Amino acid sequence: MSQMDTILFQHFSNDFAQLLESEYNYDVVIKLDEQSFKLHSLIYLHWYNFIKFPLKDIDSSTIFDLLISFHELDFEELVIYIQLYLINDKALWLRFKFFKVYYTCFLYDDFEALQTFYIDIFAEYPSLIFDANEFNLVDESDLVTLLKRDDLQLEESKIWDKMIQWGKENTQDLPFNITQWTNENFLALKTTLNNCISLIQYFQMFGKDLVTKVKPYKQILDPNLWDDITTKIMAPNESVSSIILPARKIFFNFINHSSIINEEHFAEISSWIDRNSSTYDIRCIPYEFKLLLRGSKDGFEFESFDTLCADIPGTVIVMKVNKMNELLGGYNPLVWSSDSDECRIKNADIAIGYDSSANNYGPYFSNSFLMWGNKKWYYNTYENDHEKLLRDEEEDGNGFFVDEIEVFQVLKNQMKYKTLSN
Image (tube, rainbow, N blue to C red):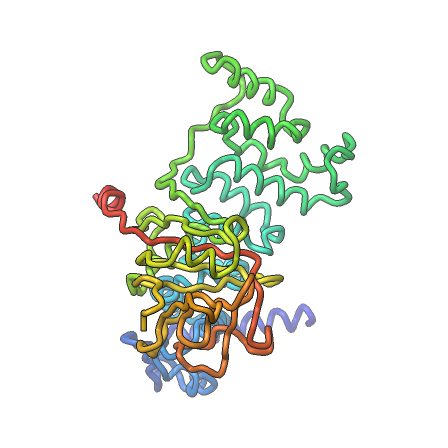
């Protein structure tokens, strides 16, 4: 595009923006849910068949694409409205699709509501970004913003681990084994993490974590910092020259006994159990999850399940599918008993069951999802007992193996819940 074309395009954009801002001679009213917006038919023509429906009837990805289109057309009110709709009604989708939305929303200045949502949500649920496969793609400025938060809900040693992980993945030519690193390698890592290193609260970490996690990388620290850290370990009352950052405000230390799911998963499971439309805050999970069985420790056979889990009321089964980043499971509010007759099961008559007889299979959720043997589960996609399809039959040919399985008893935690509610 030539300079003249650019100038003409800018003039045209300004004139078009003025048309959008004026209600004069409007001939169309767009109604989204309970909100009405006055527009001109010239603009509306390409959108009519798309936006005449309530937002609740449109899938979340399409709504977000619509938001971007309204931004490009400079529909300021609609941009604000749709952002608030996504935050208030589609927060769970925003969390689990955050890399799709996160990077896009920070490209536009008028997506302030979504930007604030993500800054706050990452502080409260840091595993969303720290445990993501795309974590190494996070911009340095965004990582710095997160590390500056005094309400980052993660223990400091894990924050250090994630910072080092990001630094190594964004520094070229580092040997895999740190014992093979040269001074140049440490200097390169220090350069990458230059704006992050001072934001770690070293003096709030346990001595064991400092020795096992920080000491191997002490060359990236400022010259006096490691000396001051060791001084505080040996003589806590001694003064040091390094800045001691105050401890982060950890709201609630949820005790996670799982090796395959995190606090956010427990919050979501709790919400699902209570049929809440929104997910519980991790600070206000009203249940405790008592670990009954872990396959890697107790065995994957139905005999282990029969011994440790049968006849115990209110249990959650969680499993990690072999060679896939996939979690499956289910909740049984009753007991697993042989005489008993996350999507929910539609057919209550065969909702849950357990066979401890010679059939040699264990718990099942409807007739289509059941324990079949050692690390093997069976799923029949022809059954229509669930609200939605759990797995694609082509993925596993009706059977799949698991790397891990865990069973928890769900216990109401009235005392902890009341304390957090007051």
